[in-house]
Image (tube, rainbow, N blue to C red; front, side, top):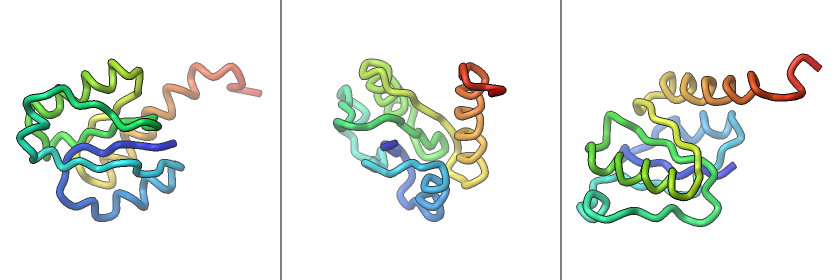
Length: 106
């Protein structure tokens, strides 16, 4: 699975956490560029998940990328930029999928 990360200047241990979940970083945007606030952002081809780090994003940037994910039919996750918050958000995402899985309990 390929993910686009929005927010945070430095990723620190985040790539390692994503690797544990089988997620590859396809693109990383810090969100500091003014153009991200004013225009509708398009997601790169092949992105399956958008991760928004809320403590490093302005409201307008977050709104633009959430809209882009919705328009492209791509799932998004919002969390703070910490290893614990990211793990919780990804676990919650995976848990919701498992709850609806037809193979559950097999």
